[in-house]
Length: 430
Image (cartoon, rainbow, N blue to C red; front, top):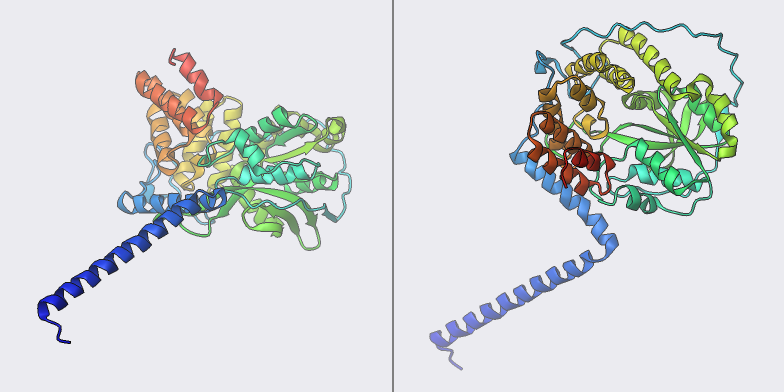
């Protein structure tokens, strides 16, 4: 049979049309299937953070992260992206003149503790997005017979999944409000021996420190981040702690020296729980450190000596500023913070710690406060703490409308945030 050209061309067009319809139908089916799969909570949780971080990286390609603001007179060329063993600082302010105090009474001989302790490991919880605090606390609570999960905690203290930081005070607050049969305590200025003593008493202990992220989330990311660990054992022979790491896995072995290095960036803070009837045990175990003010003063005295011995350690200067801020010694605190900033701090430092905001506010360095808050919001746009303090900076500048806008954003980022609500009420907003 002869096929005429015009008939053939029509047949070919029809074929192409059917193919295009088939491809469109397949694509539509794939999109519909993807949307249906996305409705499954487990799939949604797995995809959300990947999409979020891909968008962050793309944004930073076209809008690079600015350098961290330095103190007046600071030299950015001398700063490093995060403290190392050989930074080359340019000091911009004289350090506070602090003299370590001699103990008022002789220190009693320490009670010997075992060379090895191994507590039963809790059921492991892999952290959800930005959820290492709730996940680690959940594992800790399970060791006391608690039956919840990390989401039981995060639903209460960080209902917005994108909230990237949970302070230790928020974890303490959760215990006080929801687990009254346990007493929470945290102190700063801890050391390896203190951690071992707590473990030897039969309970776990949590610390907040830092770790290096496995990949960059924007160009030139220094990959430094804060992280909670649950310690459940130690071995003096191997010089290691056994830790439950919500990111890396259960029963990780961390050398004493590594833990100490990562711990110092968070003021050597440690957190533990016990039944209230056991309080005398832990009063005795901590000694003078049981009193919170005495604990801060001892830590402050030790840091004064450490900054003299290690003048290029930015974390030591930062911790000095934080403990001075605790005692409302804001003038000295900003000098310490200025030195830490000149030495170079990690990009995400102001995601987790906010002592500088308070110190600069109370010393009237509002432009510095505004610069730091803006930088913190470049790193973490929904940081309720940075929004709170930027609002106070705007308020001091007479920009109450901008202040209220930031405080309302802080409430959106963290519903029930009492500091933001107080600020709104303070200026008569609604």
